[in-house]
Amino acid sequence: MEDFKNIFVLGIGLIGGSLARDLKRVLPGSTIYGVDSNDDHLDEAVGLGVIDHSARFEAINQADLVILAIPVDQANLFLPPVLDAIAPNALVMDVGSTKGSVCDAVQDHPKRDQFLAAHPIAGTEFSGPSAAIENLYKNKTMILCEVEKTREDLLAKAMQIFEALPMQIRYMNPHSHDKHIAYVSHLSHISSFMLGKTVIEKEKNEKDIFDMAGSGFASTVRLAKSNPATWTPIFKENKANVLESLTEYINNLTHFKNVLEAENYEEVFNEMHNTNHIKSILKGLS
Image (cartoon, rainbow, N blue to C red):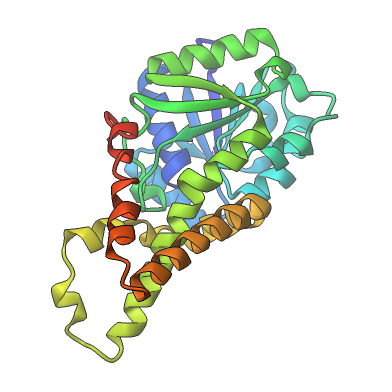
């Protein structure tokens, strides 16, 4: 890990900024540079101590470690030129929430072995440099894809960082990852956005509706506060899997609506009761 002296983080929002904060802690001898298309974000990140210095993309050849924490559709475009520019012993790591398209984008790149595809299962509904928090990744899961294509010495250094954070490691095929994440993350965000939309539209005519909104509503629509600039590219890149999960979800909603219309309350009960075992599946997750 001591070889990662100059760390460049592309995208200083919640994910990149939080990782920068933790890297400053576990790699105290390193210098963290931020690269972002928004100069105000860079100034804010320096002022908050999230990064040490702002930098331009052209300086990427000075990096020992490059972390791409930019929208996933942009990562597909930026990753090849980043690999073109880096030094022979530098590592590039992408931390976006879709992995298939980014892995495909560099599958034949001559420096493919200097790339590690990663997805930390962590986050909040907030965005921007001010959303960056320490220990966001503590005891969270880091999914790694196609590690066999990453150079062994670089992979070993990355694993030391994950251990220091500390994180739990899981290995997945990138396209399997995208299918599974559509169900457990991407569908959740769509549900939250659309529930929020439904209530907002109703509130136009019933001004007191939010006075009756309790903690259940607040927790269910929490994800609707997430940044659309982050999530639109995710839905774009994972369109096929998102549509599959969305279709199944709509079918379940339609079935519940039908049994309720038919006054089949035994089936209404069974629909909820049969899903209650998710409590045991999710036991221990926070």
